Image (cartoon, rainbow, N blue to C red; front, side):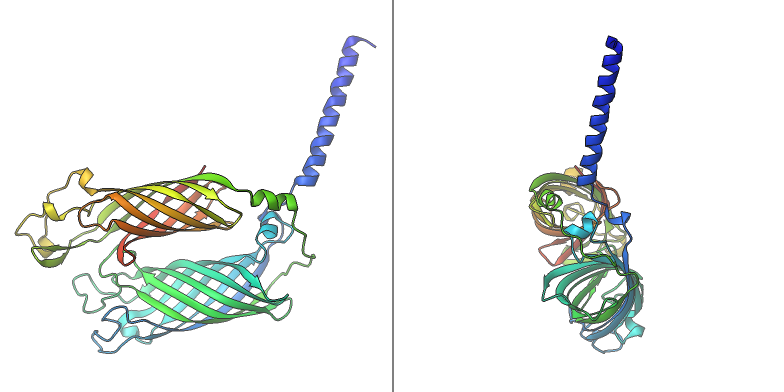
Length: 401
């Protein structure tokens, strides 16, 4: 056998061994992704009788009808899905469900507030099981409510809580679920909802509801396969502590109220907001990550009071444009994040070390991150000052490194 033949044979043998080893490795370690197996779909309806807290004088009866608004009734239809237990997501997040819902809300005063209709996404998961059929879980909802009867900004006596036809809709619930059989499931629990325009228009008092949520769902194509044991290697890898880095750029528009010369006034028009966050996050396990963030925000409406043109009032209110440094805030915040497939929910507490005049130095934020790729996500958030003063939305894109 020639040298060339011997080298060729060795090369073929080495390539064969390499391919064989690679195929064996893939066969042992490959776990299907969540959407590579048939999903289990659920159709459901729910009903929510609720109490409406009197968070503003308008709701307490200071309105054109002189009637308090203290109760509501809501209902929705929902379509959701679960991952197969044989997939990575199904193994790591047992019982996780998500979907879309369409609902309507009545506060029995349609002449004042209308009957808004919401379109929302939701996600929930078990917290604790009490056997094979009964379990306690959480659920969040996020979307938009359309069809509010609202007032122009200069006629807040007509409606002092909603000044736009569309508001955000945010909900959080804690519910007991009971599986009647393989196809039907019931649930009942508490559900809190918040409706607000995110300070993009004035007034912005918003509406809250606290109620009992009851409903049932029907499973269209329940997975027939037996529950797949969790792959320990996948489990250990998912729960391994690690660092990741989130970079977010966002923008929004907002309203601003000021007290000038002892008189409270609403600034005419809307103001731009641009922000940036850099967050090194420590992922503790598959569900939770914590970490700090450097937050930089420019607010076109910040620090205006010293630049007021005296003698201008109300709709004729004028200001000299402040230097950019007078409208820039720089802060440090602490973040905690619930990590789930597709969605992550991030809450933060922060303090601005560089703070424009008139802004609250102590701030809070809540954001929903919707991943459109493994690293790129849509950021929809809301920022408050001192837990009570609406500041601005945080609408943007983020990347996870």
